[in-house]
Length: 356
Image 1 (cartoon, one colour):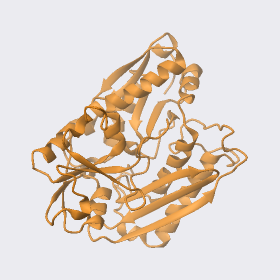
Image 2 (image 1 turned 90 degrees about the horizontal axis):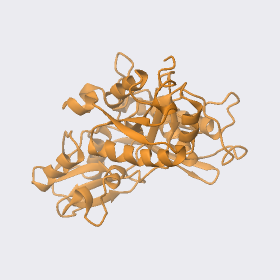
Image 3 (image 1 turned 30 degrees about the vertical axis):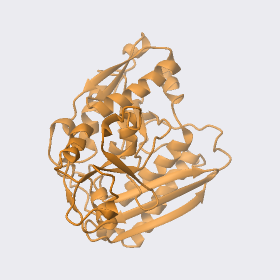
Image 4 (image 1 turned 180 degrees about the vertical axis):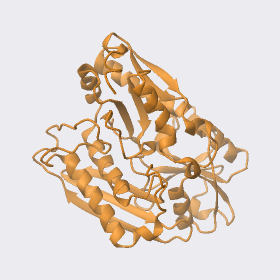
């Protein structure tokens, strides 16, 4: 890209934020817009963009997973139709084009999944044959671990349509991200999107979630105006960026594509990074997991860091001493150890074109 964003409205007043059209995307983009208005002193307007993932009703495993949500937005950014994008980080491919940079990763919301039912019965207590809606290979595998008697039903659509299928009795439960429900107001005084339905929060120890789940990625052009990059930097949360960098490095290191039945969750505790990563067999309950705790570089942790443009997983400094680089190395090491333990036998082959 050669300066399309540099000459855009970000320099003259209004900042244009590209977002998918779903209610959830609009809600989370609106939260970022408010924070950016505060940081920049400028008005931020949402620019709705339709992605293939919003129009193609086929299973995500059939149409390419993560990239179907990101590609159209990135193309609009590179054409200069908006100044930045907001993605759900779990939907963003691990590779970020050189023309783009993840300029901010705000503090992560709840990373857990939630099982939604009509009557609050826990997943492990649902009767045999109960229908559980999810299109995620990871969640499908985890459902079979939690309760082998259940059957899973491929599920697409927005949050409201998924919940309606439970309320109407078509499904006995659906698995959704707690962060998305929270951003749509679940738990508020009116009950948010859940209405009379009940939610069971699934603990991360036994039900780790997708790399980056609960976090947002704010993406812009690598050559975006300095004042826009500075305003976005104010939205960045160091601990979240470190954790999700490690999680996404596990996925990258496994080299199995975004629809792999795997989970990775990391957290920063003081100067220690803890990661739980699991690779699942699709249906028989078999899994290979790893829990590690590694020290981060205390010389740079909490003292600020610089992340160069164009990195999909955080930063890679020249000397490798910053905590973002350390997190990526740790994540890649976890992936290597999982492969040594036989995880490759549980993973699908990458797509022929090399895309996530």
